[in-house]
Length: 452
Image 1 (cartoon, rainbow, N blue to C red):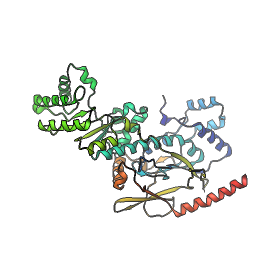
Image 2 (image 1 turned 180 degrees about the horizontal axis):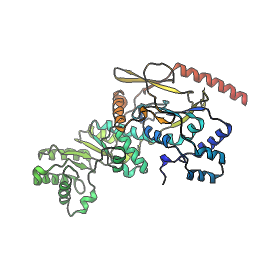
Image 3 (image 1 turned 90 degrees about the vertical axis):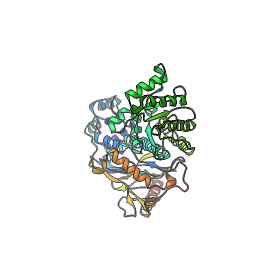
Image 4 (image 1 turned 90 degrees about the horizontal axis):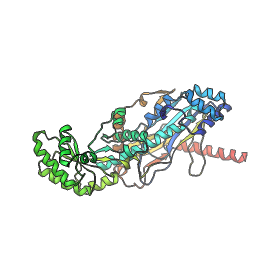
C-alpha cells in the first residue's frame, strides 16, 4: 500500500476538480489559506497544536507519480493538459505556523499556507488530516499528563488506535505532550521515543504457576515490571516479595503492575505490603481504562501510584475525538476573502497571533493583520519558504516537547485543569482586522445584491 504522505492522491476529489478549473481560468495568483478551529468544546480549555512536522513532510514530497496520473486519466474528468500540469507540480509556497506544542484557541491560525492557488488548494486534505488528528491527540495526552501530576504516563494505546498511522501519531503526540514514552516499538524506532513494556497475562498463564513465571522473567529481565493480577492481586504481590527474599541482592524488580479490580484500594494494600517487606523502591504502575478523569480520581483518593499505562481512551481521545477544524481561503491575488455563512464567518487576509504574557503567565491573545505591530509575542513562525524548510521548521521532537512543557506551564493553573474555565481564555480581534472585515463584508453584500 502506498504511503499516504507520499501520494498526492490523498485528496478529496473536489480539490482536483477545482484545481483543473483554476488552471482553465488562468487563476495562478498567490492565495493564502489558514487552518483554524472555530469553537472550544465544553470538555476543553485549550488545544495543543501538533502535526506540523508531517505537514512539512507532505509538502516536501508532494508528487503525482505516473501511476497516480494513469488512475486520474481513467476517470475521464481530467484533460491531458491538466494531467501534464500535475506531473510537474511541486509545492513552491511559504508556510507560517505555530510551533508544535503551542496552546491554541478558537479562530487562531495554526497553519498558514501562502502559495499559487492550485498548490495551496490541492494540499488542503493532507494539511487538515495531519493537524486535526495530532492536535486532538496531543491535547488529550496533555490533559492526562497534567492529571498524573508528575507521575510517569506511558502510551499503551496502539492495539486499539484507529489504524497503524493513528497508533504512531498517538505515540508521537503523547510524548510531545509530556508522556514518558510508549509501548509501541516502531514509534521508538521512528521518533526516538523511549519504549516501555511489562508482561502480559498470557505469559503468566502459559507457566504452571505464577511464581515460576515471575522467577524466570525477573532473572531474564532484572529491572522488569511484573503484572500481579492474573489470578489474585495481593497473592501476586506476596509472590514478588518472596521472590525478593530468594534472589537477595540480585532482586532488582522495578515495579508491580495492577490492571484490574479496585485499583485504588489495591494500590494502597500493595504499597503497605511492599514497604513492610523493605521494598519501598518497588514502584506501583497501573493500567486498565485510564484517562485523565480516572487518574485524577485515583490520586485524589490517595492511591500511592507511581505511573500509569494509558491506552484506549487516550488513543482515540474518546471524550473529544474531533473538532470543527477548517482550512479556508482568506486572500487571493492580494485581496482579502471571507465567508459570510451563518456561524461560519471568517476574517479576511493573512494574520498573526500575538500572545500577551504578564508575570510569566499568558493572559490573552490578539488576532491581527500579519503586518500589524501589536503588543505580545507573535506565534506564527516562517517554517517554509519557496517550498524549502526553514530553521523554525526543522525542530526536533525533543525540542518540541520542551517547548510544549514551557508553554503549558505559562497557562493559568485553572486552564490546565480538567474543569471548564469560565470565562474562557480571551481571544481578541484587533481593530485593524475588524475594520478590514467590516469593509469587505459591506462590499460583498453590495456585490451580491447587485448580482442578484
